[in-house]
Length: 572
Image (cartoon, rainbow, N blue to C red):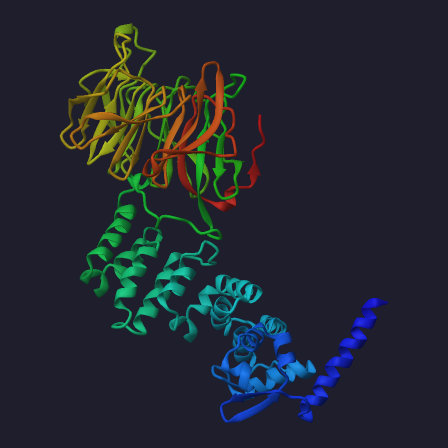
């Protein structure tokens, strides 16, 4: 009942003010806009507009002499504002909505501002979404901004060809092309849009376009487009930073054996891309000691584990695994010493490769150029126990699908780790033939097929894991210490993790840091996934999602089509 009373008196007051405005009764302020004067009531203007309230309360000249001159609004639009204030009439149209929104923001008339935003919200489309988005950003219209942004993201392929897109400033363009929600079928579309934008004003936009190269995801382009459409551009040839970025992309494309060592913000897949990078866990043993042939994928995007095609045979423990390009190779293992398998990510399936001459486990495997090398390890089938620890190095030529003896290491060793730098394989520690732990850093030169001991670790160690990030080589030890190998070949401790004490864990490079996966801690299996960031004083971040209970597993990161992420894994 009380609300109806308030409504009745409000209508009475509003109607009275409208009548008094028409008859110029009790008006006490002249508002001059262009060459027109509006005779208004201070009280009403101040009631609906904090802008006028502040003006009339400030003691300023306008509050004393009763004359206000306004700028930044046309007389036609101010007439609409006055009409809205005095009569509550529907004054917003297609032709004035944007200008009335700006004026209502200036005068802080939030009721009219809301009406303008709602009108624009109902009429935003592909043709005007960029203008609406920019307007909404500068005039506090969150709903309009959200809707216009969604249209830009979803219909980018069409919108990027519009005239409004060509008129974007650099910062707005960066905001659009860097967003993870951009719906595109390929990164070529983004490059095309930036190059068209540059072409609209080559001289005026040259420096901005050089800056934009930092945000183009060139490594994810097709090699034909990269070599024929990007590399020949004058702006690339003329600017050293652009050349560096293009070189990085070409290296990513042409060096599949080193692809996962690269740390670049330009290697990132958008939310709606058909692929994503996933953490792979292969085989091993589960919590109750059963051998498993599972292949599991962890989606960083969805924070879930999924089943992929399982390994076709039992590998047992102590096999080796690597990624070459986007395929996984697995060799050896306690159940099948002379085995080499290849997982093709493009069709989510496994294939049997030619078997190596020397079967082994507890070995290391690395990719160099277009070959895979297996080094050292242990062969249970050799009768002479003193010779079971191996020094041999075998090379698998991926394209020819054949093996050859590549050479020998200086010291036979097993349970070590390895990394590649400039076509040289570095082997860290391990267990020697006499069952003593090694502190050697051995080097096998794949070009010369020669071996040497280049330096020594701070102390003997085994079961280490090695991670390469750009030109940095980190060796993660079972006690939680992390060593870094210098350009001179020696290694020193750069960080120690507290309470680590794990064996047979996974260690991988991801986004400039070290991803440590699971491992054995005493008789227990750790299910932790930890990310370490060297650039931030080795800050540790523990994932809220745990990994499956696995021991003696292979762990890698690959790019996988999302269509294969359908069978969700549930804890054992």
